[in-house]
View 1 (cartoon, rainbow, N blue to C red):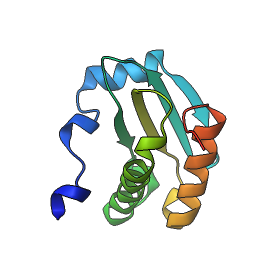
View 2 (view 1 turned 90 degrees about the vertical axis):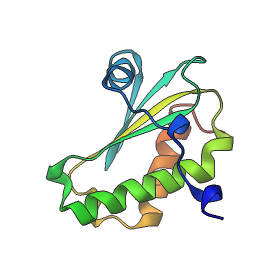
View 3 (view 1 turned 120 degrees about the vertical axis):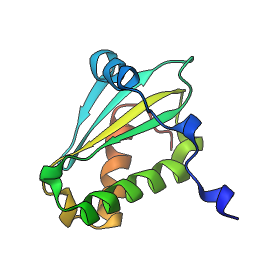
View 4 (view 1 turned 60 degrees about the vertical axis):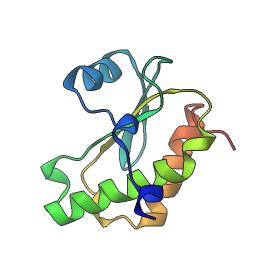
Amino acid sequence: MPGKYRFPREYRIRTKKEFEDVFKKGKRISGEGMVCYWFSDEQMGNKLGIVVSRKVGRSVERNRIKRYIREFYRLNRPFFLESGALIVVARVGLAEWKHQQIDVELTRLLKTGGILNG
């Protein structure tokens, strides 16, 4: 059962070069609590990267934010319009947000950017 809910390596942005490519070439979508960068690339596949600075909160809060974002990605991955790389950068103050608020904001940002279908 754990294999069904894991976040495998092929879905992660892991190298510095991949992060830099998305930051430089990707499209930026700003929101209230986070910023999303989307780079449409067939070779990269469908990947997710998460950036949560120490300014956002303690490690417990940062890890909770990352879990929420990974869960959103896991549940909505089939609804992404095209393959590409998504980086979500958390802003200061996101630690006080509830799980539902993060989901609503991410959905709004990705629909605005034309990345999420439905």
